[in-house]
Length: 316
Image (cartoon, rainbow, N blue to C red; front, side):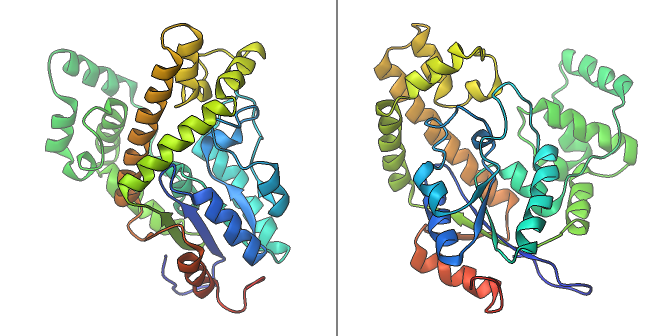
């Protein structure tokens, strides 16, 4: 939760997020129904039409219980970024509040959540000559992450050694500004805080999450994930598109191409989803230090939300 300060009071925003498979969507619907709130989707794959089963998108019954926004707004071949999400989500949240309703943001795409609550740091433009020099140096054997660690340990601590794109950008920003990109991002985030925010990260014991993911994988396949993937191809959407490279659809494509048996595809979906959940948990631990970690239990979550919103908030 962000603290208060001088100046006009900021709108209060509740965010329900967490690793995949922890039950955040179900909890968000229960909370929104009890509060009379409206859900703003922040799951990057749920923006896309025709991707329903593989994204565990809220179904018609949940949408009938609670208004949902930013679902099914894109075709699978449309690009979408954190900046696009920010452009749509902030005016939408303002409009919901203007009607006396409570916006409840739900979803697990961490970068989009961070952009919503802390803005986006664009930084200086590209320096192509310097980038070319770096790539030549790397080709001669210079380790990109080791170079960054020596010059900017603060930024290096936040970037995986394998993420050369972000390493290059950090080195470029350091050269152009003389400051660490990590420090600049932090300063920008502190300056762009339009909301008082309660971030609730849904979490379960790892073994419980794993069991849920295995059951969910089986249910997705039983409910027609392969057929959904086949229908996307029939609509003319190629396997190279980003949504179709996501976990679930990628393995179904491999099955349809004959590279995997159905049993192999099922196991690979489960393993990759489990790996995704672990990465998401790590991301939230590092990038959302102010978040409250909680089991997806309404008896635990609702008092936290009610205390945060206060008795004077609409629907509370």
